[in-house]
Length: 513
Image 1 (cartoon, rainbow, N blue to C red):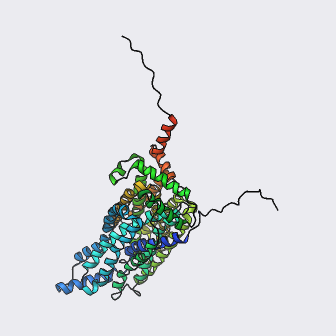
Image 2: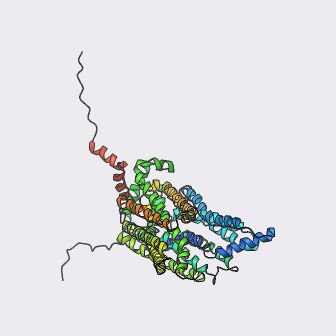
């Protein structure tokens, strides 16, 4: 038995890697009440669309004693679908004002109003015989999604310690996909996707909001918001004690103080100042590329084409809804896998692997769609391509940007940055939904070559520009980008001034007359 040196205290095991119950429960409450609703409302109107159109037509007939023509039906249904991303765009523009004045947690709580009210309106729309209530509610739900999709990653990223920030940050997308999946289940004709059940199907979106209103108040506000923006170190210390489960938090508090000093040096940034500031040029461009690449890489197009691909492989229309549920299982399993791997493999590896899989699947799918009439067996390869694309998107392009966009901005610029990235997300979402049917009609299967090209360009940008942020503090990441932007941070300028010492007077020059 080895003798221990007298007086040497035993090493204290590090608690940094532990996920404490308070952090876990706060994440579940915030994500279920926010991201889950976003995913649910993306998917809930897709499978039972014929049921909703039938209600629109019946209501119109009761008012006008005639059925609406095809053009009017197309217009009303397009409004029902497209108003959601437009509402999301409006919500993303409100985020900056709300998160600064009400806090991250406060914004999430207030946002539940934009879920509960439309849930009630959609639930009574059948009794009221007013399809307009559904269209209006979709706009309001879009506002709710726009606010939550920007506020939730901000809140979770600021709650988590640096070694768990990736896993906690991906919970945004995990719960979005969970919402999509549960909506696919509930939308089955045998459950609620039928003439009797659809009001309940739409009203269920109010349940997560109600649960969040009941649970989230018991969890702490973002400690970074409390200390950096409110100057309340006591509240921040108390929040950290609950979130970390121990009292040794000086290093993390000092990191926040350093960030607070950087914020005071930079000042509070508006969107216009953010766009004009050289020190944030690459961060801003990176978040635009990540959010645009996420939407423009073809995920909505794959979903649009899925039923056609399943039908060509011999899947009956009545059974295609179950294949869609199968793709939802792949989606949620791979998103959870991403949450597990993001702190082991890093953000860059998952993004690059995901875009590589998506781009390859788009190329193969182009070949399948072009030649499946000549070689019927290729139709089964088409289904594999759809599932492979969904798996690739779920492991990188879908979940990881929610993590990176929080990490590459400091507190002073995060509010404006999230307004920009939310606007890009919802605008590109709307553009794809609006333009893809026309592109598909014009060039058919070749449209997937465009998506493969976007995947390639986005992957190249990530490989060249975006650094690995795993395990780094916000201040350390800021220093990496400062070098890329070729600017000096305020503290570096101060250090140079101190090192240089007081200026020495220049010797007097002789003047000749």
